Image (cartoon, rainbow, N blue to C red; front, top):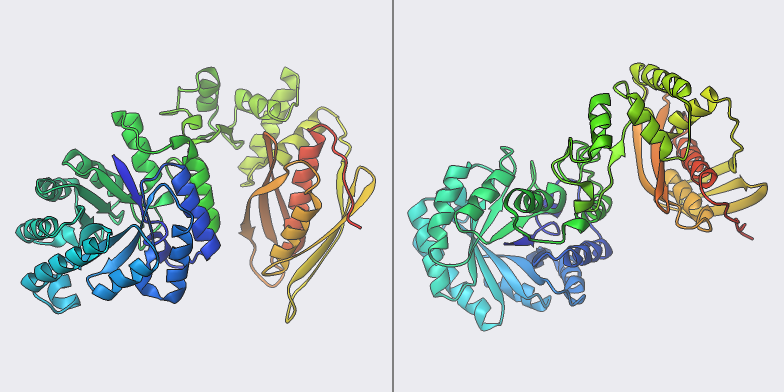
Length: 494
């Protein structure tokens, strides 16, 4: 069983998603590293810019077969050839509404044109997959004829496409079963009814040996079937290996960062909460047996288990969270920490690592010496290039850094990143605006997670100035990381 990943084509068609050439190359390399067999790099017919991007992907000399989307037009194949791809995903109309209404043709004309185009592509050395668009709403007898004509013309495989997420598993199995009698068959499913994975598995059971998918399930409307979900369903339930699953989380993070689309917290495999535990009963059980409340260990997809603090937190969870920061408390102090954490969460506040540690310090009467203090932050924008500068006090020594970006916040974040570059591998792992109050005097809450070596800390800070809120949160997180780690010697910028 193999995957054809279409994140760079179908995924990028999601509203608001646009990747730069460098970002597409980064995603393609990550897919290749994870062992994805086919990568649809884009649509060469889109324009010169897209063709240049596809060419950059093909120039990477990946192990994966790199393809381009192509309509049922010869010049689309020619454009794909100009990009140096290994193959094309030739999409032709299949349902009556696509044949008659969309392209104004007839079924017989589509069959003849498809055969000619397949032969043309094969004559030019391309791998060819024929996709009957809107196949889930097409006449099965016609799909049968389309598959026969495609293979007779030399196609390498055909694909069942549930283009609008219309079908259920029974229809999927019926169609794929017929197509697979002719030769290698793929499945392209969407998640409009929440049946993307179900339909993909039904297709595999009916004879499909290749699934089209996107990372994190991004794509038009409700998205495509998620590569990581199908991969883990096959591995965990059916003991079928497809890709290197230990790279799935990293792959998801790369795509989330480059597309700006983060998975929903409760999304399977790559969602923030997939391996997070807050409930006292669940946390206690998980700490006693890590398989108690998880189907498979997080390490299997390159993740770590997280203990989340909130109003359901129990003593075992709080002690485990404190131990991650090398903080020890007595049983009596632990009880007071849990009480304070639940009180904070009960007021609707998200309890971060910094909140927990501040509570523990207060309960134990321990005064922590800060290692990093924010002295000043300035940011400018307007007609000039947005820039920012910060001054920090680190272990009594002043560190100055500056940065530029797409706006004042981006510039300030760049400045902080520049300032912390001398502290091992301290880096910003995640950043998001958690809440904004209304009105002209609105207060924004920024939450960041910073990581260093094998530690990470989440901090939230509120301020009327989003730039200051962002920088303060990052500096506080950095301070926590450095306080809990061996001392590092800062280097001030000249």
